Image 1 (cartoon, rainbow, N blue to C red):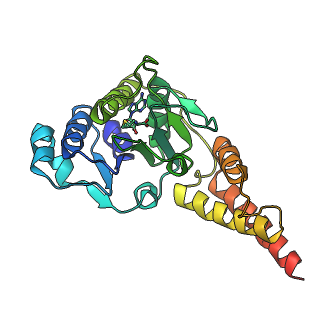
Image 2 (image 1 turned 90 degrees about the vertical axis):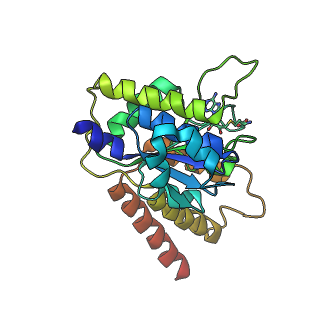
Length: 244
Ligand code: SAH
């Protein structure tokens, strides 16, 4: 019973997948481990016979898959967003291995919605997409060859999620306020950056890494909804005073 509630709060999001066979194999990997919410962001070819064939007895996951055009649609309402990546990026971000990630996802999914993003076969997730994520997850492979097949990466993380659930991790997330969701954070960032432009603290023509660093800062803190509304109130007050 508990499994259903926790697992139904977890979304697997495949971004820009090229090979429909990988979509089918990911659906099978999910169903084997008890997960069933599949989101597809702009798949190249779906529905497709090769996806159904590779899904075997998990065709129901494909039938119920939600196809959307943007990542923002896929992560709407999620307080924890994980971006999986085969390689290090220019600006380091809080990063988990698959085991830690499984534990965090299960704990969070007791009370909140969680999305796990998997990238394109040829180039993974873009930096901008990865910056929407609370954590990055990297499967520590041999450095000679770090990139797993997409569906194998999905399998591995779904397995860790299942193991974490079975181990029934005790450190429940308890907090007096619901955590901010991805869409609430995105609106907060928009508000923050427009205020910073008005203040002339931030020049969009010469952005450097300011935006990335601020997103990383707030992402590390795990803002709750009350904190977001306090910060937005503060921004509105700055704007009102600037206008005077
Ligand atoms: N050349 C791409 C690799 C894409 S592999 C790149 O450099 O990013 C397709 C997807 O599988 C990745 O976007 C990621 O979601 C997942 N994946 C593959 N290897 C992984 C690894 N070692 N750790 C975490 N995710 C991985």
